[in-house]
Length: 466
Image (cartoon, rainbow, N blue to C red; front, side, top):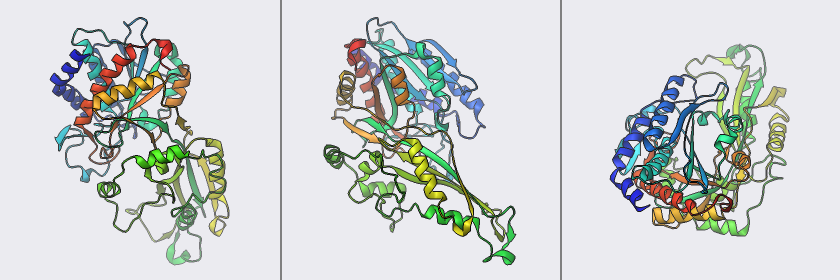
């Protein structure tokens, strides 16, 4: 293991160069216009897998999916098999004028590495391959077996991933799952995520007529679809209390006193976060009274209006608009059932429509369930010890307000395999936003932790990881 750790130190610039090659490819999956780039990233990932020392490397697909890159090393008989997951597709570059450097060129600045995908999630590809190469390039066998999969459509909901897992179940079957697509609570504080919120999204359509009418003729007399929509969405305003949706909290698992105490002990620099996102001075946090930021975003449900459409400002005309639409996204928590949330939200948004307008609510994509696990047992102990030594700081178990929908189903598919979600981002990473970045010091520490994790898991047997 020490030879592997030394290799990481000596070859860090080469690892960063590999990350730079990955982020240089505009593998945007959200617009359907960059499929050639996604193909290129899959091929490059396979090339890097081979260079790191993995075997049986190839591009895999299921149905009409975007490409997956796969590689393995299975020469540790009697040792656990570790499944490593990452994704090579990225979000588009939005608010381009706010980027301080080229989003497709990895740029060092103030101890961070800036580029789209530098944190989410091409850094995980480089971190995994760095830890693998650290053993393979020093003439050492890996302490455990490795299967590594890099998906090409995570940013569009992993719509083919479960089918892919089911199709390739025997090939992918592993004892432990490792994902580096989550956050450390602060720079330098390693974090292992044990809960994820799920998601239920709906499209709300308001219709008042078939065609628009000149506002000079109809304004004030005809119902305005845009105003009606906003009156409906305005019902969701929760001030600093619970969401005003009847029955919405019936299935929410209450926080235990131990959980509340643990969340309250975690650091949260409210003013620093406000400044980082440019929160306007008059705005206040929206947390429910009695819950801090972590309790609210990890274990309480949320509703967000993620898009609205009535007409474009650029093409605006003096008209009473006949149609307006919005996308409403709900984050759900233990023990909420997606179908129950959909039922309650639909009833709330369609009740008593303004001016008697027509309101329809339809699902916007398949729901994704929440996930929560007990962060104890041999695999978690191996991970926590590895992170403690790699970061030289005690790790903390945390929740996550986001959604990684495959974790629960994949764990079940692998017979209850422990899922280790090790942080790679931090609050300043700005994933999906301008100036996305990776803290380079934590990047080094994570790779060091992964080298130690492989060593720790190699001291176990497949029947002793749970």
